[in-house]
Amino acid sequence: MRDVTTAPTRQDLDVQPTPLALLLLGREADPKSERGVECPGDLPSPSDPDLVERARAAKERLGNKVFLLGHHYQRDEVIQFADVTGDSFKLARDAAARPEAEYIVFCGVHFMAESADILTSDDQKVVLPDLAAGCSMADMATAEQVAECWDVLTEAGVAEQVVPVSYMNSSADIKAFTGKHGGLICTSSNAKRALDWAFEQGEKVLFLPDQHLGRNTAVRDMGMSLEDCVVYNPHKPNGGLSVEQLRAAKMILWRGHCSVHGRFSLESVEDVRARIPGVNVLVHPECKHEVVAAADYVGSTEYIIKALEAAPAGSKWAIGTELNLVRRLANRFASEDKEIVFLDKTVCFCSTMNRIDLPHLVWTLESLADGKLVNQIQVDKETESFAKLALERMLALP
Image (cartoon, rainbow, N blue to C red):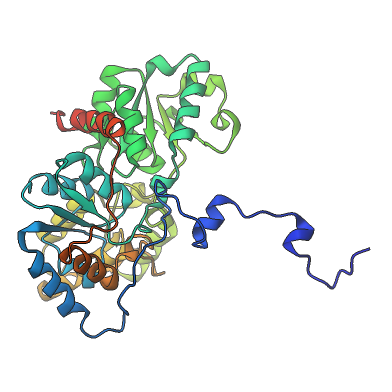
């Protein structure tokens, strides 16, 4: 009998590390994974007092050869060097509008850089300063899982009625699947228009990969009921759904979510209302349905920024979105006596977005300035073709 006071070893338990565990430990690499891979090269020390000047000097050396995109959720130390800021799709389109720029440095996450590569010319090279800057939501739907889901829908006899709609926050593979199967991409700003179009083409929608945006748009904006929505769980046989459920549903929601927006709760809303009388609660539609239902205002990142720009002096706001942006907005509007706070009392940054820091940016810019291409993001031609088709359908929306 084993001595119970001795901890068993891995060999005793016959436990083998999973591919995900190895990725998280930094012991394996998967260039197609949103979870990230190792970043080659020697990074400058974060304590280097010359980092800001080094970034500025390298960017000046590159001149018009580089165009630097900064997502709203980036750190201030990075965003200060951005030529333009915005959400993922706006930035990808901005990149496509600068054909003279040889290098597109995307300070965001992997799927965003993929979208930029899809929309820019073959002569342009899209670079992600840290390849480990991924997106947990995008990771929740793989090409293999979605193909299996389509098989389930086919076996249930409903696939011909289903139009896939994929959120911009998805991998190039998922965008390509969507284009190949007659669907389109949406953003948080145009999700309703995308769903209106999809229901003109078919009777059901497979919404990927964020269940909350799909549910909130269907119920809040389109008048559907919660019973019209079912959640497909890729980790359960047949998605955890019966044939009857699939045939009855209008919205088949993928079981995915944003790790930042998904943490806000109804308790968060109730707590901030108790702490700050008269506060306006403004949240992103990636939040849970009960949070969206309890909020005063709901909208995309650009909507949030515009709402605060238009807000009267002295107004109070609790914002349910990424903390870097909330802090930046609070500082920006402090002089106008607008009180802006994070909806949740617990600090929560987007951990993968925050991987793009000043040392990675300096390393990237100096490498490019020295003629060394690093961390290029490339989408293969077939994937690009179908993904672009799905994006073009979105762009053609009225």
